[in-house]
Amino acid sequence: MAKSKKGYFGRFGGTFAPETLMPALREADEAFGRFRTEAHWQAEYRRLLESYCGRPTALYEAVNLSRRLTDGRARIFFKREDLNHTGAHKITNALGQALLARFMGKERLIAETGAGQHGVATATAAALLGMDCDIFMGTVDMERQKPNVFRMHLLGARVIPVDSGGKTLKDAVNEAMRDWTRTVANTHYAFGSALGPHPFPMIVREFQSVIGKECRAQIKKAAGRLPDEVIACVGGGSNAIGIFSAFVKDKGVKLTGVEAGGEGLRGTKHAVRLTMSPHTKPGILHGAYSYVLQDKAGQIADTHSVSAGLDYSGVGPEHAHLFESGRAGYTYATDKEAVAAFKILCETEGIIPALESSHAIAYIIKQAPKLVDGSVVVVNLSGRGDKDIDSVAKFMGNIF
Ligand SMILES: *Cc1c(COP(=O)(O)O)cnc(C)c1O
Image (cartoon, rainbow, N blue to C red; front, side):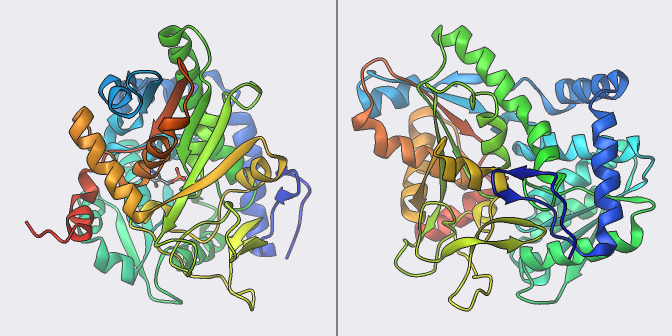
């Protein structure tokens, strides 16, 4: 294990990686430092965000929902990341990393995927930029997420089945890292969230920070001031850090992350890493020091959530720091609360939200009676829910 001082958020983060991976991480770090100052590449990134992804995404005032929850006392806004190409914020990071790879002269992209959302976003970016693409996916996830496996094939990517360990996301990350140590000469590893060893939490935050920058300008125009609270769901933490980053310095803006409470904190069927659950403590997972769900023996615990995108044992190190420093607050919503919130948004606003985003909506539903008159809140609607209608139908015991 090698350790470097760079890339810490308070006591969290760092680079805990095998020696064989260090040259690749150093190269990505150094290249990203140059990439972000190259006007030509930055202009190309902005052009694609605008004309291909559909940015800036809208900031929408949910008047019906505000009326239903607060009699119109509070103003609830949604940052509409669901309107992005491929249906979520993930494309913003995938495109950025694909361009970074091209900037480094690499021809092949690899990525891990759990539910398949990041795999699809990466395969999309690879197709657009004419790159070779291999997506590592656990065989259990491949079976559960067949439509996304097919989507990746259609987009010209190969899906590499991972049959080790629990055959899910954690194992796919391990396998992708192993591949990268051998192939770094022509390959870039596009991490899917603000996770992993330095420089990834920084790179992913920087690409996703466009969400917060847009939102800050939009809410000032719409409400005439900064919001009282900004809310986002937290899986690995990329959509949350993307929107939080523009408001961290504004001490008057409360930042709230919502984790997956699954079936509740009594058992182990949840993915609550920061909201002091009995099973979480700091540890090292996938190259960084952060909060990690683990059993008594320190083994990485399995997680559960109705939403595949929040179903991960670790969390981005910057969130661990925001949590411990008290700058952001973290809470959770259960599967039941998230599905109820999903239905309410469908009915009141005609928007089918992703189940991940529904956790953030569940929080504002619970919080509504406590909102003071005239308060302004922004919820990051990280993605659309078309992908989730089967899960919701099953959860409600319906078959269609
Ligand atoms: C993947 C995903 C998430 C969780 O990932 P973060 O890195 O925590 O943002 C949230 N919402 C949607 C719609 C997703 O696809």
